[in-house]
Amino acid sequence: MSDRFEKQFPATIEAMTGCVAEAREFLGAIKPSPKSMYTADLAIEELTTNAIRYGYDDNPANHLIGLKIDAGDRYITVTIEDSGREFDPTRSKDPDVPRSIEETAVGGLGLKMIRKSAMRMDYKRRNGRNVVTILLPR
Image 1 (tube, rainbow, N blue to C red):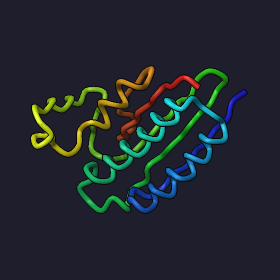
Image 2 (image 1 turned 90 degrees about the horizontal axis):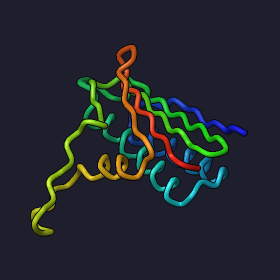
Image 3 (image 1 turned 120 degrees about the vertical axis):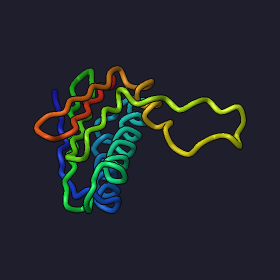
């Protein structure tokens, strides 16, 4: 058995928010483990937000982000594509561990959490697009 969610949306926070809501609905219907639900949700929000905020030199709304979720019997695969500047989240540096709460910097933890929670996270640059694929247990 295989279920699929697939959508392209303008690279704006507003459009991303709507797509994330639809993806959550799809994920809720296929009943993944709570950890996989959390990781998929985090990955979708984190990777698309990063692309929107940091990936484009011009107006992000001029670009489309693609989201695909494939749910098989044992695994869920989340694939996110964008045409922003090249960025490999599998190689990004983990943030330094702060010595105190006051030293804690905003940002950087999302990618680390995705890498630690997913079974696998792969990156390819294909035809001028970033393609990130995340494998999760169902």
